[in-house]
Length: 138
Image 1 (cartoon, rainbow, N blue to C red):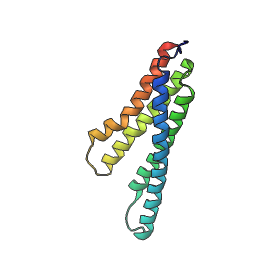
Image 2 (cartoon, rainbow, N blue to C red):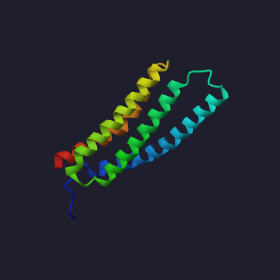
Image 3 (tube, rainbow, N blue to C red):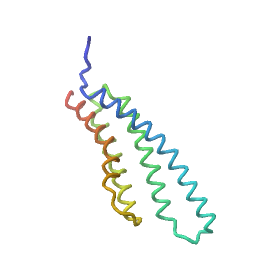
């Protein structure tokens, strides 16, 4: 039985699939949130500053799109050690969006949630680990 030279191939593929699922759900939730914010703005007759809500919704949408793309790239390149650096970059981008979301949450007046930060970083970090394992196989 021939074994793949990409040691992190399975790891990257599984995390990539989870990122595709999470990204797709995130896109749908972000669109619903943005529509809800727009409805709130209409009902409130724009008397309230909703800029922070729109920023959070837009950040969530862009982050979810990045997560979906990263997942697709990870699955497509899971057995290609030469593409490991591309996957690492996408994993870092997703992690940055997660951290930015936590920062925006704090800037919006909420308290810092360490658990939210850690859970938001678990999947991108595991994705990066899988990509790094592939890079070492190169």
